[in-house]
Image (cartoon, rainbow, N blue to C red; front, side, top):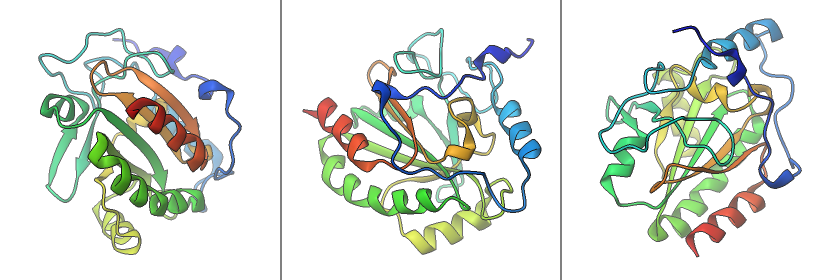
Amino acid sequence: MTPRRDLVLPLTLAFGLTLALACDGGSEGKDGADLMATVEVAALEVDESSPGDVTMGDYPAGPYGTAVGSIAANHSFFNPATKADISYGELRAAGEKKLLLVTSGAGWCSACKQEAVELKAKYDEYGPQGLEIWSTLFQDFVGDPADEGFWNVWKGQLTPNYPLLLDVDFVLGAYFNPDSAPMNMLIDLETMEILFLQTGFDPASVEAEIKKFLE
């Protein structure tokens, strides 16, 4: 299958929201050419057979997309805590949560660190109401791919109470420009529709969308 480059989309901001804070310029030790090459590798065709995707029997059928209103492909991420991958389909099949907040961040991104701390309160408040949070990491402090060693450092420093995962294939690179990390995406776990997609650290707008859905 020939990769579809039309899925390397411009940044789509849900509801025209203005970004409050985003990491700009990428990481130290990684030049722009290398970073964009990483994004191009990640932005292959998003379907059942793409790297980082799995197929579940009752997972909503495609076509899948990367914009608000489209169905999210069944991505999977590696959880070093369990030494296993976990997918959207598995979370959906468990039937315990209604809404998934997926974040994508990197060690060099100061806004990502701020968000990681703020997410703990959101998980405490909205987790019992049906919110799940998956915080994924794609690069370390110097722009190298995030690995288990970096995961341990990040987890030790920020002590998240929500699942912290590694985006080994950087499948979320198809959804945003990594220079503008963090990325926040809300997915309806019944339909797998992307409800909200935003880059930058703007906790108020994310919380407003969580409340709107859960209420």
